[in-house]
Image 1 (tube, helix red, strand yellow):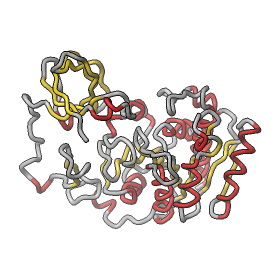
Image 2: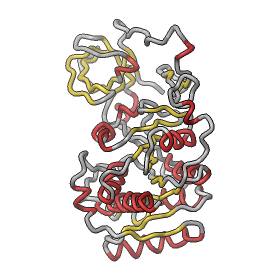
Image 3: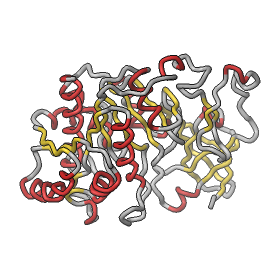
Length: 363
């Protein structure tokens, strides 16, 4: 359960939109790196006493190496301006029934300026939507889209399989000028728009953000147990179904690697094989990059072949994509491996982005 710690802020180390990194001296004299979300707990300053949830950090789990600030108990933030007037307030509760549940304005609520655009919205009108199971694919997919169409309007839908606050992602912070907006869906929050679920979030991307291409992927982090079904990326298959239900065009970014030390993720990851092969009931365009090493290309082609019973397998040229990836405004990293250490992974994601951009351009 929760491993609590109490301490005092000694240094504000750095910040990015929505998050502040701190150095905290604990009651026992030790030090701990912590992360605060000012929208939830207020703006921390040196000398503030903080209560921390240090569980994942102490257990060595994939939290980015942070304890999380739960409260500044001696200096609580003021109530939000609309706290006493519920007529114009949001009613979407995210991270529901947890101690830090935020109450937000949903993009399609009565008080939203976008209510009229969404109240009867029911169609994505062929919007190409790229699906990926890791957050690390986001900048690579975006690089592929913009390599093909530099002016493409791209929206990101943050699902709730990884980090719930959009503010946790330094990658997303660095891509803000590359996107027309972020929609946080389900239990995720902190995007430019808040949606109840992926379906309403997709409609917001199309009808509010006027996106020409969208990307669906969970936030940083990936919950997995090493079993066939025990991983948060199964939601990729459900995303394909949602996109197709609403008249969009699902484009599957395949998780491909010849560098991952775990056999289940070598070649075509079992995450992609399960999500697209078992969970996705609607057809998608699954993208293979043509620039893979021959042995890896043959292995992946054999693994993807059974998926052709339901999906369309498309091979996309990769000329120019390496340069586009190297020009990414944010560092590329997956499971601690950069572009050169796991080139196939990023190339596959960029190829999916290029393909989606071509679909958008041809209508």
